Length: 535
Image (cartoon, rainbow, N blue to C red; front, side, top):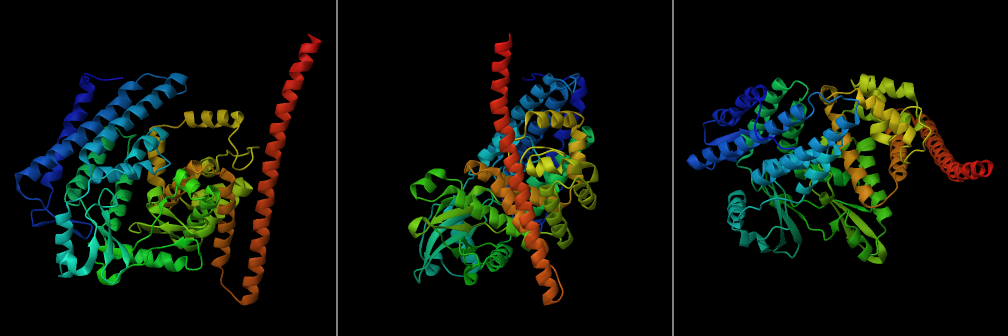
């Protein structure tokens, strides 16, 4: 459905939104560097940059305004509980996602990163996550002369003095950084990371902030400030390579006993805030099934290693990789069908509050045991009390009092109940839920969503993820207990007993699910046969 005109009621919002692009530029600092979250971003200078800023901002304003008005007008007067409403909503989701994809591809840089961020959120409709996921591998690399200038400025030496060879074409180009393959003069193979396209970020961030604020004023149910706030935090972390180096070293220390997990070693003498030099690993993206098959690597073993990595980060260390898309995890083949899981891109990490980590461990224990009241109580601790009833659906794909097995597909009866509950929700409820969500909760949701997506691509059953979460949630509660040796040994014993209890319950649910499936597959044809005999 296309609009060739906007009715009078929609014109005021568009006029208001049209000023945001100019406002973003007007608010730009007048000194030689734009300052954004402790990052000095060189200006391009001249009227060309001014004009480009207006064009990019106006393009964003038009796209977002069109999307907002499209939702309002297309759903006007349609009964929320009707099938027509659901069908229309899916169509608008897809149409809007495609429009935003075009915006990101046109504006590039910051917008590509923003699209990647949105595509990783499980809270957004699937039409958005699937459409915007096409941005994961899209970026425009910087000119090689810019990289040479930055290296010379940071180390006071020419690039040929530091590196034996340096590939001019990047092996990976993200929206705001790119990586080059190189060899040091002592023969070590390295990867060199450079910040890439940073000049436009300050204006783009301001434009998006102003835009989200205006949209929420015009359409109160559509509030996205929570997303901008989280995204700004993510960007500020990703632009500081010294912090990325610290994150990588901390992660390597956390997983030093895990032989399958590899973190590239940092070359600190060749690392600054703008240049990061690290050990080079050969491998392919974790979800490249053809590569795994050709290398004789079992995809299920890869999925288990990835699930254990994420689980230990969340439940045990409380230090989570904040950009867990498939390109940041490489599978590097070893001899005999073995492999290493290489963790890349450590710029964005989230350190969980200790109390949140402990409560999250308790939440998963309650989810697996389906302890309804405990789930609701923990929801209150998170400040999400009224939405806690949806936790089983969000994390395990079940509703309260469900008879389905953990990790199995939701039965039609449960889907009908869930659909009835969701019909009562509005966009305002969704916005309220996201605004109420603690940043730590958003971080674990993102990570869980990416893990589920990757495991789905690898064709691994859901119960593997759930069993892994169960083991590490219990371990997370155990590892942080204090007291004497005897007290810790008793707690370890209770922990093991609790995990065995969880595994037994999960297996019972799985068996009951299979018996129910067998009952239906046998009894239904039998009933039909007997009915035919009687008639």
